[in-house]
Image 1 (cartoon, rainbow, N blue to C red):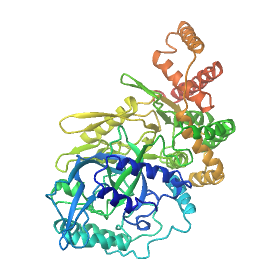
Image 2: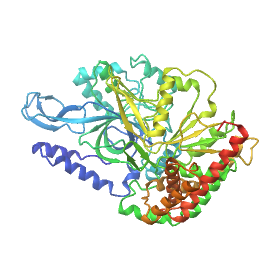
Image 3: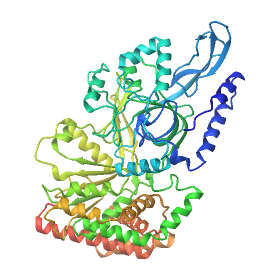
Length: 614
């Protein structure tokens, strides 16, 4: 794997502190990453098991910033003295956590040439809810590009995997021991065992993992602070030497560092967990991600991506028709519900006007069979189509006990994650069919309020004990329910199944197996790409819509309100984009009105059947 040439670092150090040194390092790696399709052969911590990698390797990490720690001061330049020859050597400490000394060398803390610098540390986790299907795609691409190099380190031993937290702490208090073990770790070629999803070869059994965590002197297994329950993956401490503004979801190219200093205080316990559990990486290059779909170019605005976009747009019509047919079968033959599901899946918050998020399209799919596996299998279908998703089973127990809102732990000085700390364009499926009669306690009421705020305002209010702080979000929420949802929704569509399969699991499995992987990939590209298309309404169409609204109000003042017009415009927007049209046409406006008329008629029919249920 490429890494910073040692001669380059030592030469720069001997010639003094060159302010352009870091720029040259960044340029060096930028050039390397342009060679031979580098993004595919640079190992990713998301897909490549940790025991495949050596300390100080050049890696990439696709992650979400979960928390930001206080600035960290470190020795950017430091001087060592040989105890025998008294020779002075200048070293750079950037991109390292430990000041390294050679044999017979000692750190000269009083040297006037020592320089203290500052860097920012982010606690980063893998993208919450990321589909394993997309992870497998990325890992297979890496394996194919590295046939000769993808093999576990033969010199790996699990002894470092079982190193206790006290050992980590002890190493900080004994620099010589730290230096020796650091060198030993380098020779071993491993940075410790990390249990995470998708690992082809486990380093230890689950039982030994439990023993390891108990040996860390924690009262309970170390909490990696993942927002979603059941998540697995490599949480990392990401050290940034150049601050990147407004980054939540990013892909970092960095050097993997095996060690980090730790203290015994509670804050240091959380901020500096054993490197065997939470690796350290130093950022050389970082990029804010538009999306996490590996089937598309990372940045769709670049010139080289335009060929891909225009090529796919030329075959959009048959892809939409196939997707509509696929979702119609998934929704038990209901083509109208399938239309609305497509509109929902490509919707996104494209701007905000004051506090109002424009473009969101939360759908309540009512009429779902109760005590059936339908909603579970429908979610599995969605999982196959979108890069990141989560199914919230809305039971009384979950609402009362799950933590939805991130909150500040002042004792440990960290932000404790909550279920709603999710990246943009995550598909959140709320399954209300599981809700039974029961009592919501205070946390449960707060969780329902948090969901309502998320749906209505696309924001999450983080709890800092003494105050709350609003964080805007962009989450696609689909609510499945038997009757009308208890939660607010932009649109309610009542499911009208045209068939009831005797075996729902067998039916859904056969539906998935009947779709060719190439077709499924086109569905995935379609749903991601259309979110990022520019959209506008011409003055001519704007005038026609206004006239239409006035005419409808004239005929029946109760037939349409300003809110109804807003929703109709959102439906028309998504409908146009779903057909690859970036401007509203008269034809699409009439089609949107038709869809809304069919949906409302269906709701009225259902209301007549079930009384006041809807």
